Length: 253
Image (cartoon, rainbow, N blue to C red; front, side, top):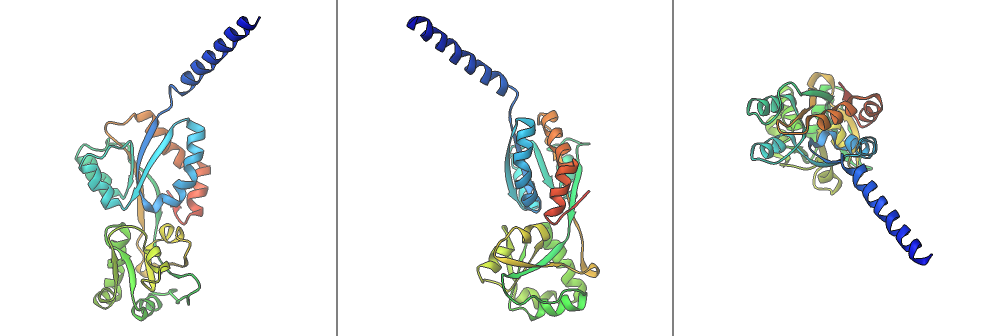
């Protein structure tokens, strides 16, 4: 009887092991390179996708320009989320599969101050101009899409040299963290990037007169498992994901 129980236990353990292998046989890692503008939303959506699909997401966040450069030097990926011109360039290079580009969301540039600091008025172009020129220093990104929007806004306001002379250029990372540490008075970046920093108060987006929107587009690697990658992009367009994307300061497309 003892011998039979031992054999039965062995068979049960073997069955459990085989079942585990079978259930995970179709699971895989999906490698994602994602603009940090979508990070706050994707951080919340990752567990939901993994539960629904059985796949696991391995995500690298950075500015669109840096991620594009990494793709060009051979960094592996299945899905990439960048701005449309960079996606187009990667399609032309054969790195991204043509016909897979999917617009996910758009967002504008905003302004933030250190938590508890005075909140300047930025409700009009003239008010924004006063806020930027009155600050001791302004932290802004030089490699992200927000940097181009900020540069265009400064040009429209006619204060490029004045602001940049006292500016704090950030090659990568979150400008809000610079302000949270007290190293600058104002932070300029995409709204969801500002909202992701706990040590700042987000004043709001730039006024319409000087605002430009950054579109974030997902696309699939030319060498990816297309079905898995398509499943992720479809998930990000589903109503439940759209609600979270909107709550994180983006406008779903």
